[in-house]
Amino acid sequence: QIHVVGECSHRFCKSCLDTLIAQHATDKKFPVPCPAPQCITTISTAECAALTSSAPALEILQKLEVETCIPASQRFYCPHASCSALMTRPDDLSETGNNAAECLECHRMVCMRCAVAWHA
Picture 1 (spheres, helix red, strand yellow):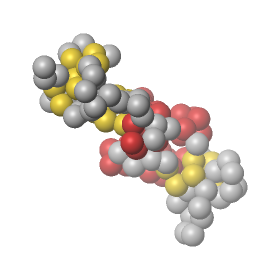
Picture 2 (cartoon, one colour; picture 1 turned 60 degrees about the horizontal axis):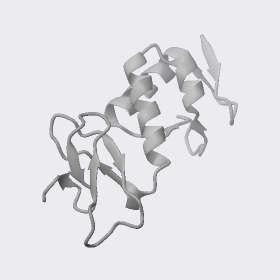
Picture 3 (cartoon, one colour; picture 1 turned 30 degrees about the vertical axis):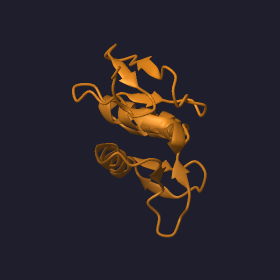
C-alpha cells in the first residue's frame, strides 16, 4: 500500500513509513522527516498516527512534540530516577524564595531552580 506524504507529495510504502516512524520514536527523534533525499518536509504527528501500527511509538512522538513546544530554558525533567517526567520552570524563578514544585507524575517535591530533589 502506497502513502503520499501530506506536504510534499512524495510516495512511499506505508509499511516502510511505519518502520521509519517506529525508529524515530525509539531514537526519541522528532519531528519525523520525509525520507525522500533532500526533502525538508516533516511528517505531522497526525499523519504519523494514521500510518503507524504502534501505539507506544505514537505516544512517544506525541510527548516529543509537546516537549519541543517548551523553550529549552524552561524545560527540565523530574530528577527522581523512577520518574523523569517533563517539567517546566517559569522564567522568573526567585533567587532566595521558595522554588519548590510537585512533580505531577510521581508527586514528589523538586527544586525548580536546581532541577534536583527538593532541598530545604
